[in-house]
Amino acid sequence: MTPTLMRQHLPLAGAPPRMDQATRARDWAEIQERMLVPLYEAVYERLEVGSGTRVLGLGCGSGLALLMAASRGAAVTGIDAESPERVRLARERLVPEAWGTRARAEMRIIDETDGTLEDVAGAVGACGEPAYSLVTAFEPIGCVAGDSEGLAESLTAARPLVRRGTPVVLAGWGPPERCTTSSVLRVATKLADPLRTPGSWRPALRDDLEEVAQRAGLRPDGSGRVACPFGYADIDNAVRGLLSTGLFDAAVTATDQAQVEKELTEALHPYQRGDGTVWMPNVFRYLIARTP
Image 1 (cartoon, rainbow, N blue to C red):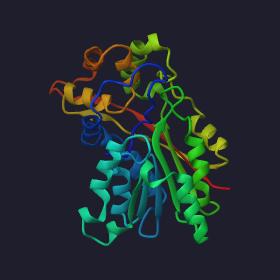
Image 2 (tube, rainbow, N blue to C red; image 1 turned 180 degrees about the vertical axis):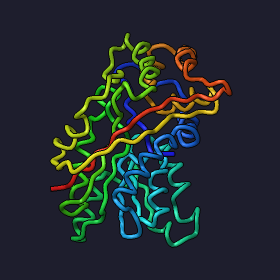
Image 3 (cartoon, rainbow, N blue to C red; image 1 turned 60 degrees about the horizontal axis):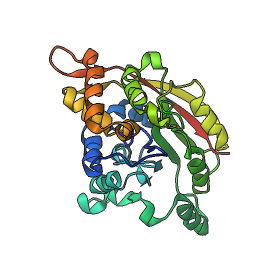
Image 4 (cartoon, rainbow, N blue to C red; image 1 turned 135 degrees about the vertical axis):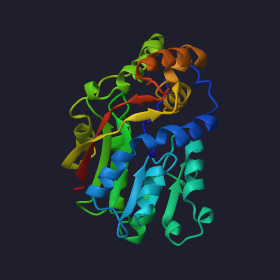
């Protein structure tokens, strides 16, 4: 359970990956999204998210993190321009018509058809009242080269929507030696090497989150680490979940989906337990920064 586990960056060269995007979005929502629930729970607990909180979720994906905040009584808005298919699933989860309760009436999902974050900021600015008391950018960075591109700009664009000192939460992968999944993600790099794309796996660096905060003009104000194991019912379930992240798109473009699935299956075998389940311990990191 999580909103969005990784930022989706397609290769700069070559044709788009030959995948059914609706199926991949559904696999994300049903299999992979839940893996970072411990991270979101830790952040919400630390920041005491509740009925007085108004959350803006950047890169909200299919909306599970927003749903978790709403279950604590928060009003939530999500924005995502990466995957229309995930946004469609988020609306199914969050729109008032699906629930018929007043709490759900304080939920909003924004995609490219509704305008950009700058448009939202302009509308709020015209009213003269900041809209949000917490901003989250929960898509973990730090395992793919270039996966933080555009994030600082999005955070900067969100600043007119908040007051001075508002917490902004960034998430990232922990040290590779504490992330078992890192060894599996290297399969994507090996297969995509012929394209020499910027989307190759690379180990997370200690100051990844701080560098993004600095570029966005934010002041770091605390951090934490959370254990987030990736657990799957079987190898097939794990392959579908990992492919849904977008991290293997370049590999699919360079080879084909069957080849990627074959090599991913082989890489997962060391983590399959006697009962057939797959278990990969990981640690993720979050940074709390404040707006100036």
